[in-house]
Length: 172
Image (cartoon, rainbow, N blue to C red; front, side):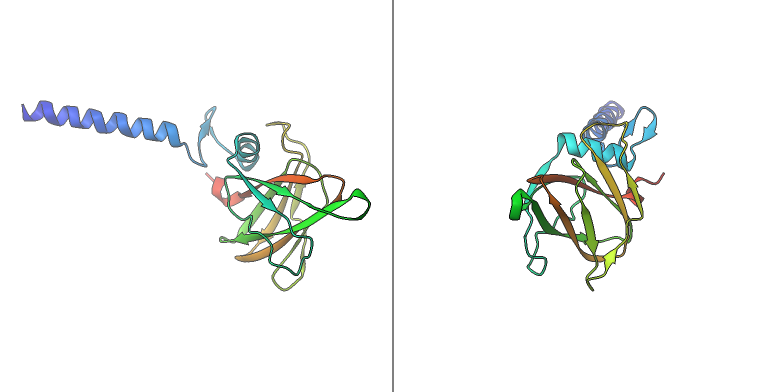
């Protein structure tokens, strides 16, 4: 009797664990026998979200909204400017040093500044994605821990959607 009970408990725990693992997946979810890469994650979140809204500020010296959370799509409304152009600034809080990729749904001018006001150069850029059409550009920056200012525009676009991916999260 005790052995039968233990077998049922083991079966219940095993099936529960399988359901949880299948439902959650996480950032290293298996697709077709390989680990999901940064571009795959960017496409997944650009298409399915979850989406969070942020309104970019027009003045780079003001307190900008934080858009550093990973595994979400940031829908950033840009500030209207002269001549129908739009631009704006958001903060990017980086909690782990490494290459941080910014994936955008539209190709707009982007600049990143460190806390001292120095412009950070692009480590790599990508404009071709076979995984989806919802991502137009990916920009990689070698960043240390800290807060960075991200500037968008000037552009005719009124908004930009962005997915932030830390490349090291996808190492095998």
